[in-house]
Length: 274
Image 1 (spheres, rainbow, N blue to C red):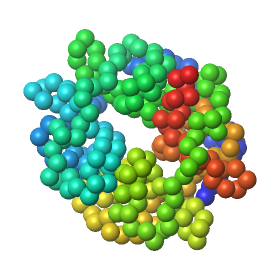
Image 2 (cartoon, rainbow, N blue to C red):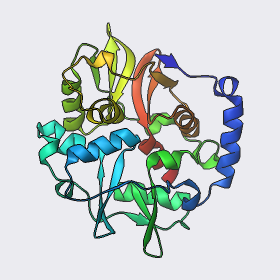
Image 3 (cartoon, rainbow, N blue to C red):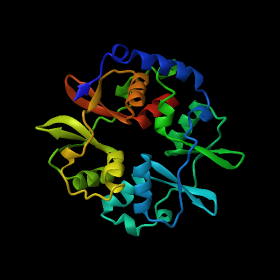
């Protein structure tokens, strides 16, 4: 496990660029993802999962008669299908999608978007004059956070303190069931009792579902490693910088050499929305 401490010493050019970018990003249009991937409501969740895995995205907008009618996410797949031992090939997108969409305008402020995301509990579809023009996720929002003064709160106040772990010899199938039943997006993987990696919803999509691979394999061979962590009492804006620069959405928080919790991109959005 690699505990990141001296952020400016390790990544000064990236930190400076992140600061400059954060000053420029004040509205949704500056941070939204404009290229929206869509799917029809009658395709299987297996096909939707494959698309998400291949595109490395966590959600797809559902279109019917050329109109956006809902959204399906990796969490829907995990909790509503895989955790219940259902076959995604037999489940249609329309039975799993969330509807109606949570909408915002490209002219809305980032703060307003963060508050809407936390209040409505979902990704945001961006509409301009009735037309779908983008989507905003927690990962999009934290890209604007790194050195904004109002986010200098500590991760300790927003992290989840109970961290699920699994031994490297456990199967991916077992870990996926735990994630789905507990409605969490990741499990820390241990080797000899010590954390060394993490298995996430995105790993499931890109490594297994997108490629049609069996999940009856040891998770230790498939988890993301090394495991990056941050010290307790790290400011949330610094955590946002680490996630953005490392292209990750979850960070274990370490205190006295042990994992004390885990902070996610969504947790950071909640802090920013205050």
